[in-house]
Image 1 (spheres, helix red, strand yellow):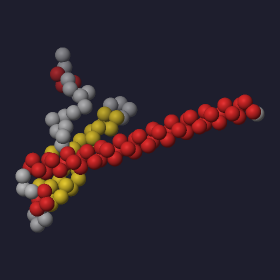
Image 2: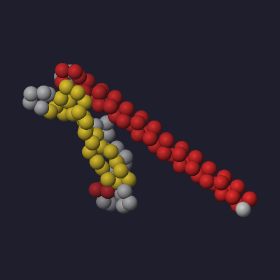
Image 3: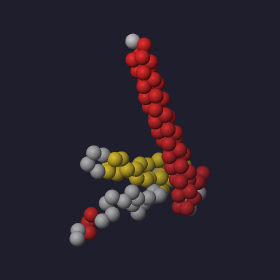
Image 4: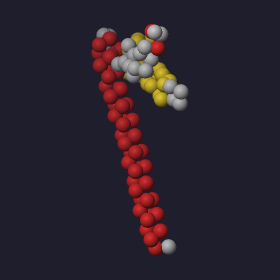
Length: 110
């Protein structure tokens, strides 16, 4: 049994929620990181995403408050991408429904 292949197909890694780091010398900011998985033809490709969450003065000096801000940001991004996906699917379904109806009408009268 090859133990290296176990878990490669699982959707989450140990950093499934993401992680935060402090950056900067003069202007200290919290930066949030997370993985996004893109399905590819031969498997999944993992991409690391990052976003500046805010300054240390705004968020606070403690890691849990920065992680809470990262969860908020990811929820907003996930909701936005879900809305875009929903609009794409609904427009495709609308287009298919209307072209099917037009094809039936044109075949009936022409």
